[in-house]
Image (cartoon, rainbow over all chains, first blue to last red; front, top):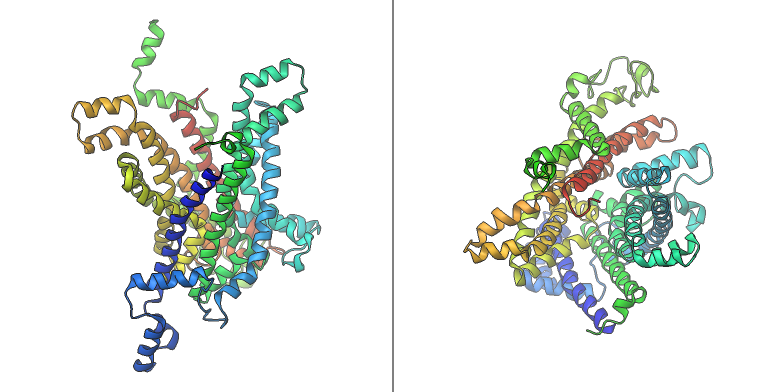
Length: 310
Length: 293
């Protein structure tokens, strides 16, 4: 198993390299001359030259990238133009809210998706099946921010059950609607995947055996079926986290959620490029990290991976 | 062989395709939805009851009207008919969705074909690049790119989305080529002396068309959602151009008091995206013989 994990981590390294290269290039294409961007048009050429040498900006692109990487590795993402603080501080402050929202949304997605998919597979080709599949299709077709608005309209404005927006110092009431919004899309995908995976598994002989030996249908589905069918669903959940994060800037904007996504959008608005790139890089790191976690989960759940010799 | 199956085998592929098509109510539904949207988008100047941009005279009397006969979807702050604006927005939203897919597909197909067929170092380099782009949640990279381009508008939306959206097609085509590459007929053709170009373009590419078509259908859906998201955040098309996303950005201010300004544009997005999803599902069922039960 350690070989498997080492392999997975080994695969992530070139991707990580590529990710930092992309953010580096974007920053440098966008900024053109960062010193001029910093000092303005009427800066003293001599001072500018000195700053350039100081920051290594007179060196070739490759050296600058190495420098950038060295900084990123120790957590230095540069300085925010607008807030006059290190980008790392700005970004770190927003990270917990986004992680909280993403984890809650993933939970919503897993619970709703697995439940809907299982019901659909158990009641294959019935009205239940059709309803669940129509719901999941709606889930993946609805723009996440619009769903957020409609949930606000229904549950916050009309029914008054939940607050309209805001973080509320982390109160659970404030988390419900954003998590539902962000989780719905993923729930749709997971439901579809669970249904087809489960239908596949339920055709296997050992399911017939389980039924033949008189096990209750619930046990057959949950213990024999779902446990074997859940693996592809887990993988999808890992990839799905990427989709989930896509929704983060939108959901956070609708709900006034103080997370990374809204920071990103605001930073684009006031052209605070170091913050834009810092937040973007962090999003990619979260995604890669989550996928690595899924791989770990895989190793724990699947005996075929766990016992892998090579 | 019975005469029936003989006749079936000799039926042309297109006829068989249409026959399967007509047997799927879902795909017919999807096509009808999309046809309606396309017609609405193309004929929007003729169909619109009012000018979608012109601010009418006597503004106070027509500002923020609720839905009623004459203004079926209500009016916005400047008294403009929402139905007309949604019809006008359909042009932009569908255009972006389709054009981005048309730009992205050849790029993704080329990368997927070469990576899959040549394998080895070319494959690892191309796939690591793909992985790196895919590691950014799609819209996040698109948002960062708009910051770099420093100008938003229809063209920049297309460029930005194309820059992040080619990866899906590349992945899918590569996977397909990897499995086809080892097929016996490919071995046979190369044993007969066919060149690489001939194998790639005459044999591998046509066999990928089915998955490409399905991916395009889902891709357009995804592009429409992305465009709506960007425009909603104010990073997409700029006024006076209208898209469904920018209508929602205007509407959210009035969400609690004039909800129709949000309800109708969102419904339009959902229906269009739903149409492409249903179409994609249906195409997959028809085209992929392995999935047919």
